[in-house]
Length: 266
Image (cartoon, rainbow, N blue to C red; front, side, top):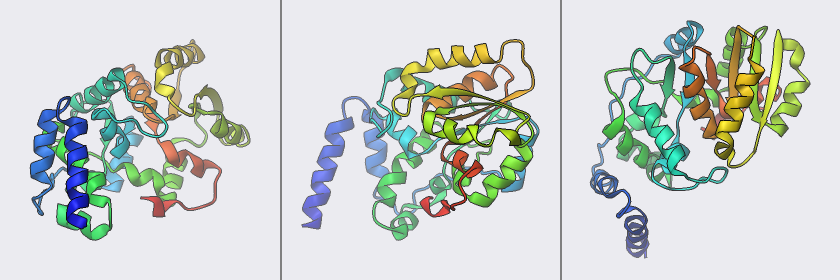
C-alpha cells in the first residue's frame, strides 16, 4: 500500500510540474533518493545577524510557501502569479554581500534528507523543494539568516528592543494586526499604519507602494515593518533599494502584543 501511495504522489508531482518546470522535476527526482543531499549554505550567527540589522540592513524572509510560489503553486493566503514568481527570483538572484537586505532561508536547507525524515512525516517533502532551489540559485559565497527567528519569542523581544521601540515606524499589515498596533502606539516615537488585504495582498502591490511613498512624503528616519505575506518580500526589496530600512517579520509581529510563545511552530 505504501509503495502504491508513493507512486501516486510521484505521478501527481510529475504531472503538475514536468511541462512548466522540467529542470526542477529532474533535480528534485534525483535529489529525493540521495540520503545525504543538502546544500552547505553559510548562515549568520544570531549575534552577527542582529549586528548587521543594527548597522542598517533590511530583512527578507523566504520559506516553503515562497518556494511553492516559485513552482506555480498557490498558498492558502496568496495565489500564484508570474509577477510574484519573478519578484521572488529577482530577490534571490540579486542577493550579494553588498545588498541592502539580508536574505533569510530556513536552516533546514543544511539538513540531509535522512535528517529531515528523522524529524517526522512530511518534513522531507516540505523542505526538499527549498534545498533543490537553494542549490540551484542561491549564492553560496555569502551568508544567510534563518527566517524562523521570528517565531522565537526571546529573539523577537530582543529585536524589538534594539530595532523598533522608540523608533518611527510605518507598519504595513492587515486590519487585525493594525487594531492591535493601535493599542500600543505609545511604545514608538511615531507609528503610521497602512492596511493590506489578509489574502492575495500581492495583487495590490502598486497601490500599497504608492500608499507607503505618500505616507513618507517629506518625512525622514522611518523604518518600514511589513507583515502581509509574500507581498512583504517585494516591498522590502523595493524600499531597501531606496535606502529605507525595512523588516519583513511576518508572524513575529504578534509578539509586540501577544504574550504566548509560538516557538513550537518552527
